Each structure stands twice: as C-alpha cells, then as structure tokens.
Amino acid sequence: MDATLERLSARLASADRRPWLAFARRHPLLVAGACLLVLMAAASLAAPWLAPYDPTDMNALHRLKPPSAQHWFGTDALGRDVFSRTLWGGRVSLVVGISVAALATAIGVLIGMIAGFNRWADAIAMRFMDGMMAIPGILLAVALMTLTRASIGTVIVAIAVPEIPRVVRLVRSLVLTIREQPYVQAAEAIGTRFHWILLRHVLPNTVTPLIVQATFICASAVIFEAYLSFLGAGTPPEIPSWGNMMAEGRSVVQLAFGIILFPGIFLGLTVLSINLLGDGLRDMLDPRIARRL
Image (tube, rainbow, N blue to C red; front, top):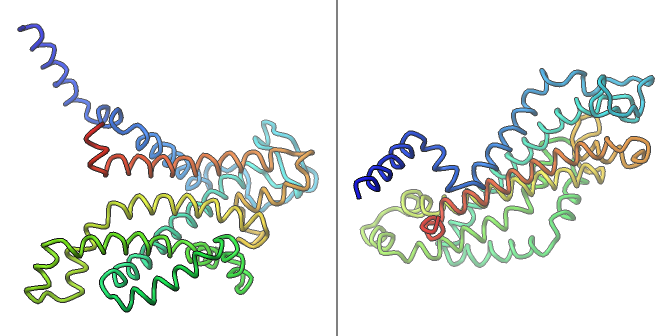
C-alpha cells in the first residue's frame, strides 16, 4: 500500500514539474498545429534573412534549373530562385489568412448580434445573407476582384465578403439562445442599455465558438488566395505568392516540376497546421469534449 502511494506521489510530482508535457498529451492536435504553424510563420517572417536571393531577381542564364546546392528548389521560367519566392510567398498567404479571419469575424459579430436581438434587423439582414450564400464564394470573390485593381488589400476584402454570412449565422444562432438566459432578461428588466447587454453579457459567451470559426476561416482564406492567384484574379504577378508561383509553373511543369511542387507543399502544410489548431481549440474549449480527455 505504501509503495503504491509512493509511486502515485512520484507520478503527480513528475506531472507538476512538466505541465507542458501533460498539456501536450491532453491536446496533441492543438500542440501539433501550433508548432507547425509557428514553424511556417517563422520561416516566412525570416524570409529576408533565410532567402539566399531576392525573390524578384531574374537571370536568363539560370532559367528552369533543377534543384541544386545553389538553388535548393530550382528556378522558374524567368530564372528566379523558387526557394526564395516560396519563403516570401508565405508572407502573403499568412497576411491574407489572418486579415480575412479578423475582418470577417468583426463584421459578422456586429451584424449577427444586432440580428439576434432585433426582429426587424433579423428579417432584413438574414435575407441578405441568404442571398450572398447562394452565390459560390469563389465566383463572388472573382467578381469583386474584376471590379477593383489587383492588390493584397482588395484580395482580403474579396475573400472576406463571402465568409461574413457564415459568421453572421453562427453569431445569430448563439445570440438567440443567450438572450433567453435569466441573466440577460434580468439585465433588460433593470433597464440596462442595449449596447451594454451585448458587450457585457452576450459577446463574452460567443468568444469560444468564434475563435474556432476564425481558424477555419483563416485556413479557407489561404486556399482562396491561392485559387484567385492561380486564376489570375488575385495578387499582382510581381508579388510572390504561392498561387502566383503555381500559376506560372503550370506551363513548364514537365520541365521544372518544383515550381508547383514546393509552393504546393508549403501551402498544404500551412492549411493543415491551421486546421489542426482549430480542431485542437475546439476540443480544448468544448467542456463536453474536454471532460473526456
């Protein structure tokens, strides 16, 4: 009996000394996604120091070179280093993904909370959102891009607009449930102002699902940016992005497959890391799932 208690005490002491290890065991998806995303983000942010060449430098003598010690990922049709352009392209994808998630979430929360509390606003806003969701997101984004000049800012707006209805519907469904809670009804009974009810009682209870939704929007935005750039409706050609690189490499894929392969690998790893992070956050923040872990 004493030996069993000693072993149990030793295990508890060991767990206390290594809380990060216990957390990793309980939430492996979250830790794996976060580590992979940090690695991809660090590589992109350190592009000015890690990239051996300027991503826009062209050299006709080194066109379509295979991977070598001089050019790790080879060169493209204009003699530009693919490794350098892949690192710099990650900056565009991460900026677009994070910005789209923040913009779509902010606008969606505002519209969703008002629609959830006001019947007239609900009738107008949700019919408009239903109409937007009836249009495929990629077609809506392409249509918006054709009306504006190509830039990273317009790409962010064009991708964020199709994502807003999804956030609005999520927030509205949460608000319809929260507003029936006794503490919200009590706040209304004592004459608390409408905006204070939203900020103090409603908004804090929507944060958890919104965080998870924002991660999936970020992953979707990274893919959407690659779609638009591949179709020629995304970032300008002079800006290195993974979508632009794959679009430029499709005509010479048989001569230099690395132009499409390596940006595609980085794109896939980035989206995978964000999705793993979202799944891990969902498991950690959902009390029903957390109790089983």
